Structure formats: C-alpha cells, structure tokens
Image (cartoon, rainbow, N blue to C red; front, side, top):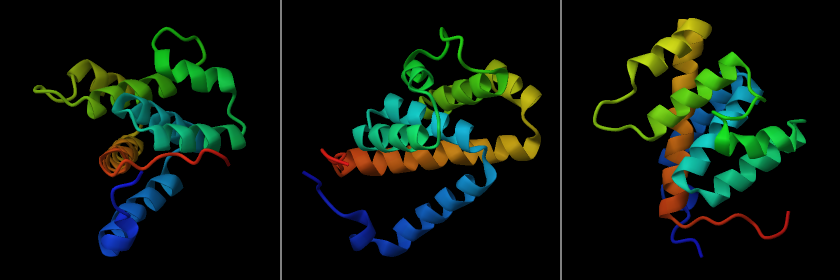
Length: 146
C-alpha cells in the first residue's frame, strides 16, 4: 500500500522531476534510456519501475532476452559498446560510493558518447534514481493487472 501520493502532495516538485523526465526522453536514445531505467530500477529494488520500464521497452519492440539479460549485462552478449558503457555508468552512478564514479568507467563512456550525449545520459541516470527513491520510499507498487 502506497504511503503518499507525491504528485498530489507536492505537485510543483513532482512537475519538476517530470520536467527532467521529459528532457531525457527527448534527448537520450530510447533503447538506451529504457535499458538504463531498467538497470537502475533493478539495483534500487524498485518493483514499480522495473515493471513499468520492462513493459515500456517490450511495447517499443525490445526483446525479452535483452531485458532479462540486463540483470547480468556484463556477461551477456546482447549489448553493443555504447549500451555497455551506459549500463556501466548506470551501475557506478546508482551505487555511488565513497570514491564516486571510477575513472575507467567514465573514460570508457567518454570514448563512445559525445560530451552532450554523456551529459544527457548522466541526467537520465540521475532522473531514474530520483524516481526509484520516491517510489521505493512511498511503497508505490506496480499494478497487478495491466
């Protein structure tokens, strides 16, 4: 059972986060964006977002094999270099530790993403982490039927 409806209680803040969401949707490749959203949501244990983004990706034509493999993306052969660097950056930013994002992760991403693309990718990772934290904290659950 949900603890609070953020959109109703803090509509201006909700709109601000949604503004970031609209920005990244318009500026990050849709396939990569859904992989990033799914991976961060898995790491954060956000069942609502895992459900939503896996359904969204399937509806957009993504294969179930690739979606299942996001959980073990390092060992899976289904992702290209740009997707792998996006997933590695997602892991590092989502699990942000005492030492931040490792140089090797950042450098690998910077080799295959332009500076603008990298900035937009970082915003996408940050945005899904905000959504995850709001959803997990408020105990937002996925619908049983869709």
